[in-house]
Image (cartoon, rainbow, N blue to C red):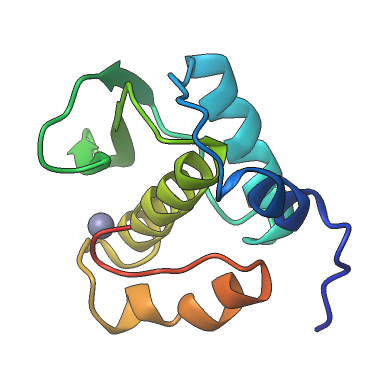
Length: 133
Ligand SMILES: [Zn+2]
């Protein structure tokens, strides 16, 4: 499928990725971009995160924890309070959304085959997908 170059995701990434414009995401921004990425990239297959935590992180941009309680699966997102720009924030959120998809669909979170199967789809939106981003 061909994605138009004025697509909202591509436009945001192209407009910000090479800039130095430090960003502290708010929960509102996380939710807004979760909705946009869900619609554009994931065909609305991703459940929202149950909790969103924004804090200073040392070694990573974000992490995802899949939980199970009383037979219900849900996920918690913890995301860095600092990003170099909005592009990196979007890359990171999209990565964590793949983990949410993995947890809800196959009950496992890793960077293996079910993670990497999204790589080709991501590239259509000019987003990398790898272990560190
Ligand atoms: Zn990951």
